[in-house]
Length: 456
Image (cartoon, rainbow, N blue to C red; front, side):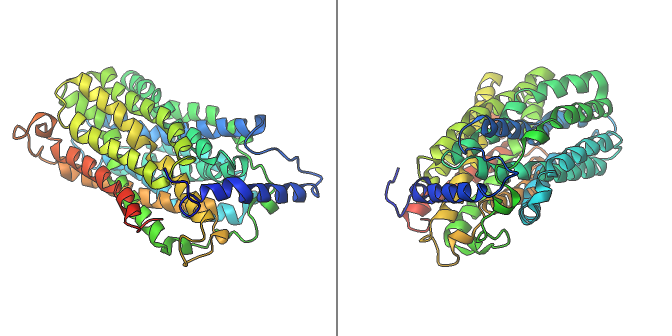
């Protein structure tokens, strides 16, 4: 939207900064006899890495994303019928991953030789956590295994993907992140149906054990392709310090993070409650209920690459506003006033498109923080590690994720407004709908803040 150099640091990265960095790296690589230089932004190796990261994203983060199917099953089958705390299983998995990302990323950036094998450790931990979850007899067991342990596994397996994207893609960074992050949406269009069938046929114990084995077999080969483009001694320039968090003190970043936390409070709730709402309020069957997650995921799959491309073209505040405004309007109107299953499915797709693409715009924040020295006097952008910017943003999202689980239970406890409000607002889920829509709307304040001069 704006093309001036003071507000579009993207030009700095696409121009002199990125070309100089690439030339420097290529010169240094010539002195390394045991390392084969691969080009950035093109070539089979770059795209194979991106495909592997896409699949890792889809299988690791897609599983808790499909938890709505598990919750629908757990809430109607022993030994979890009537138990509270079920929503916390999924929010803990994603929340632990997001909250722990700065720690995991710092360790992996400080010890890059270990980073290469972190995906293997994460894959093994996630598989073991699902096997352990299959022996659960209480909700607390599910939270500890399918929730916390699985979330730690995601962090180990997935952080290298985030870090290596910055090496393999320079000019197309936003687009590459968008493609990778669409993996969750892609898997979410398949996993709910597969898991719903398995749960109906075998029960949760066998389902978790079988899926642990399937997950292991599919993801192990990906470890070979999730590899760095640069040798460890060149992966992080000497000035980049993964422990330098001074960028978090700038007003621009703090306001972005505030909006990010607010958005995280509401954005996870639909994926948890859509199947339950479809079944309990609209009378949908198991397959039809799983279709809600399918459409949500398909929307995310399509929108993430588009949002990634937009962050390479527009100011990040504009991109964030598009995502949040669309999510707010679709929630408050399409879900809030839906009285039929068909309209509800339209909402699922729209929410996936807008809310599902929100995190992809983080690449715009990362670019701004690491290339625009005029943004703040609190730090020197040349010392900021780009991967750490994304990890701190993930922490903010994790705060929202963890809090949203118990908060959502409180919002629908006793089915408030039931029979007292119009359409879906009177279904007992009214406060949840309002909360989801309002948090999305509030997180869109980044655009007005920009025009007020609070955000660069």
